[in-house]
Image (cartoon, rainbow, N blue to C red):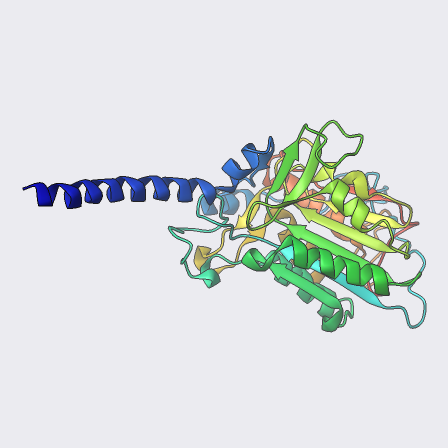
Length: 341
C-alpha cells in the first residue's frame, strides 16, 4: 500500500499544480489584468449588436444639420472646402498602419465566438488597418513599399518603433506621413509617459503593451515634414492630443471622455473586425467617396480631404451611437489636407 501513496500524492499534487498553472495562465492572457497590475486601465470598445446597428441605420440622416448643402458653414473645426498647400513635385508618402481585433487570450477580442488562442485568425482579424492601407494605395496613390502595416499578433511595439524610426530617417520637408491605429486603448493617472497631463492615453497592442501618446510625441519629435496625419479609432481618442503641432491633422474617433463603438465584429457574417469610426471615415468617406462635398462650401471635387472624411464620419457616427461617440478633429494644417496630392 505504501508504494501507492507516493504516486497518488504526486498525482494529486500534479493536478493541483496544473490547475494553478492554468489559472495563472488565464490571468496572464487577460490584458486587463496585466494593465491593472501596472496601475493602468483598459478602455474597451463598446460592441454594437447586429440588431442595434440595423435599427439605427434606418433612421440615419444624410447631411449634417445646418451645415453643408444648405449654404451654411460646417461646424468648426471642420472642412473649409479649400485645399491647402499641395505636395511638392517628387515628394514621398509614408505610412504606419496598425489595427487589432484579436488580442492575446479571449476576453478582449473584437470577434464572435472565440474560445481559444487557436481560433481561426481569419474569423477574428482586424479589418481597419487593411481598409486604411487600401485607401492609401487606391485613393491617394501611396506606394505599398512605403506602408508598414501591423495587425493583431503581428503588432509588436519593437517593430512599430522601427517602422517609425525608418520614416523619421527618410522623410524630408514637404513629404507626407500617416499614422493610423485602431483597437483598444488604455488610460493612466500615474503620469506614465512623463508629460504634464493628469490622465495619459495610449494604444493597446496584442500582448498588453501600450504605446502612450507621450511615446508617440517623442517618436515623431524628429519628423522633418509639417504634413502629417494621425488617425485613432480608439476609446478616449480625444486625449491623444500630445501629437498636435503645426502642419498636423489629428482625426480622432471620440472625445477624450467617450468610448468608441464597433461596427462589425470579426467573424460576424463573414466580416473582419471593423470600428464604427473607420467604417464611416475610411470605408464610406474615403474609399466610396461619400464624404466629397462635406465642407463649408458644399463643393464637390471628386476627392475627399481628411477634414471632409471627419465631418462625414462625425455626422453618422454620432447618430449611430446616439451621441455617445462624437469624432473630433484637431487640425493645425492650413485649409484642407488632401492625402497624396
